[in-house]
Image (cartoon, rainbow over all chains, first blue to last red):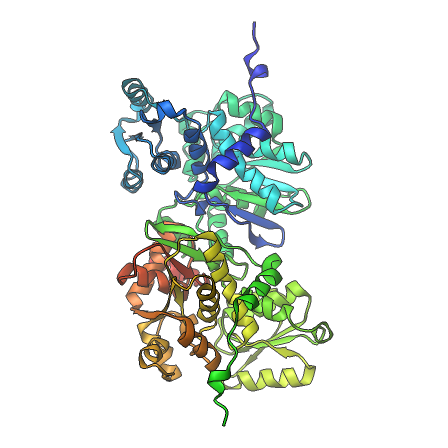
Length: 316
Length: 316
């Protein structure tokens, strides 16, 4: 009998360094911005697609063998991953087919099409099967949103940049959904600086990974419960691969309330002049409302794709 | 008879390079962000005080001889210059006294005090005289908002960064008020890349420098007329020193309407996830509504200190 989880290969610092070299021409090296005397933010909302997911998508596509590139890529997503893959495909000159559920906002469909991708709108339960059909028909490569080492290594470049730009960082706060972002960041940071504390942050209403962390093994919440939070980018759950990284490298978890998340969106705009979506604001909510270890902290503000009317209502 | 204007020493590339070295530890090297396929923005709203003026202030203070530093600095301003000098003084460990007119929003007074500066609130007509008194009483150094070579050289570092980060830049759009920003940017850019077009942008309602440029000599508008624009950071007028730089180095001027400015604030937030104040959005308004020379353009988004309620009303 093979114990799969113990032999699962985790992403290494070398993987993340290779990803950094591959994606450098196609992503923004986001600056650290002062939130207050104790916190800097890493504003991934400043990426061209408005979210960190561009890093993982560009890295994953850059690693597709040249012979497979003309057959293109396929992704299914209602969120930032769709735009990330469409953007990466355009950037690297590959065709992209994106499968989105029928409840996806027209704005996001239009943005995905604007990057030159072919968009397939399907029933919510048909996303995976339609994507699988496209992969089979075209011989295309499926790009998962988080459950892949190349995607994780791409997201990990955020950890490299933080360690390079703030050598005395003590704590890094990272939003957690499927876990690709924190897996990459933690793998890179713990290899470089084992003393830095990497803390996952979730909405209380989608706190399944915090519950898993407390229990020491994966706890599953049903999708309906996870969908209650306004942080619509944080409704996924970890895979075996991301959970293996989290268990190995993450130091702690914090959960925050819906009111705390909305207040953090407001404070980020006022103090740093950056637009954050609720999912991107959760680490700042943790900083504002919970005790952290001493020393300089960095919050990864993972994205800024918030409907302008929602931002207006939070600011007004 | 001496013709002062012809012998006025203009800021050189070497001055700007020295400024870049002096201010590097204390300012953000702002990234270029994609607005659309033809325009990148240089988001100076991401500086800790929310505006480019930190660059000039830090450079000017860094050049005060060590024997004069303990007597501190004085500035008068109702706007971003107050916070810029307060921030620079705190950063470099000098006392700062800031004179503000009585109609200054409490939010800005609080922000200036938060940087550790002493704030003097006076009648609008007493600003300069009270500042002069403080300089005389304390032996402090007066830091003007734009009419000084060290301030201009500091702002010019934006030009260096643009040329380094986008070697094929063809056009740079810069907001114009007192002219310190465009003087520094144009002096640096024209020394490095004489083929790049540097274009000043003003609100139609405060288009005094555009009028001067068309006339070939300084045209003065009264302060009441210049105060009609919503772009409250663009109501000043050039000095002899900044006008000399503008006449020598700037290629063209564009003016934009109040509606175009508000729409640009909206588009910047939506497309780049950056908060811009009306004064910072005018170059994007020029891009969206006027014809530009061919080739990649950069808009210097000079600041993001907009009242949240105004931003909400523009977004909503």
